Image (cartoon, rainbow, N blue to C red; front, side):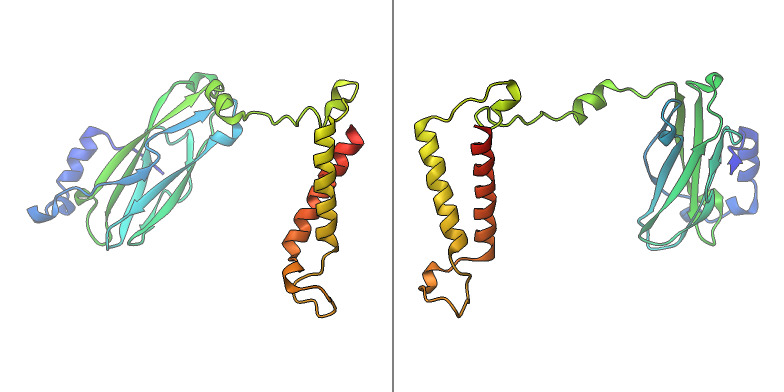
Length: 226
């Protein structure tokens, strides 16, 4: 990783032979990189490592190089290399100087790209701001991460609140009917059973037996809790 060149060094680079190419090849290449900025948080160790994804949508190989305004504070894995046509590459960055005096510091990464075999002066560049924060904001994340809690029906798990409530006669009869149907389904033969003397319309599938067993288990819980 290298530091971002100063203005005088950029002017000197423009006078090198790489900059004296035909005018038709001087148009800068757009840099497709994500995310557009990096945020590091002192209280979140996982955020000390960030990934920049560089995309190459062009039908030719691109060479890239990553520079920084504060190279001593960061480590960049694969700070320079190649990106194949119509592909992307992940560039791992790590903040290695988490100290209070750097909170809020406005550092920058500069990503330069150019066509393999060409000069850096005819490529493209993009600056990625990098900021070290004291704490990660929690209010918005908590609101999005918390999901409504599911509460079971009161007549099923009313014992959790003290004295269980008895089932109403109508509901009790419905549960008995559903339980009998589930038992009948469990007793019926499976499809393709040659030993059965029942008509094929009375044969059931494995899925139907599993559903009947599940319903019967739920009803057993209801009767035990009531």
